[in-house]
Image (tube, rainbow, N blue to C red):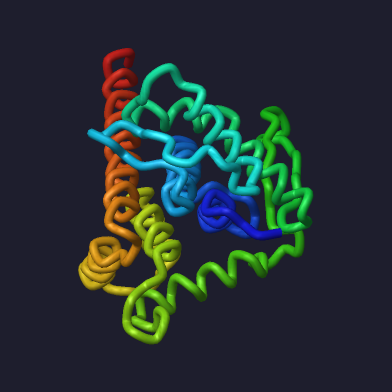
Length: 230
């Protein structure tokens, strides 16, 4: 199975036991952002005056991505990228998880916390890091170490995933043991130097920014609401 960015992001965000490393909000928004990034990289959408516009309705061959494409294309009028994050996030995680289970990458496990509360986790089918995740980690590590494609540039898809990892708070999990400031500087440089065509590059950057700001605003609002109630 050829993974989309959403699949790669999901595997990076879950540990081998199925624990979500970044929380539901960032995972869900990150997955929605990954789908938008795949569409941008495939030349299917662009941001015109900060609104998502379909430039090519041709299916990509990825059912998850194509469902999002059809939904955006069916809109009566273009909407801003941040207005698409929540709608695209609804039910998306379950779809990506299901196809990773069907592919034999993850295994669905159900148990109870304190023998009372039901819990479902999607752990590695082998108990060890999935081969697909290992390959993605190797690709991203090569990118930040400067071993992109031989000319020092990082492929557009890897750069997009690195930006997504960064804004979702996954960087230290994906690149452990590296000095924080040095890591941030390198990730910033890769995102800024994405070699995708100009229109695609700008769309990718804006989507990444939207993911980060949307998650941050929602988290802050939730925290304020909780504090007010208590």
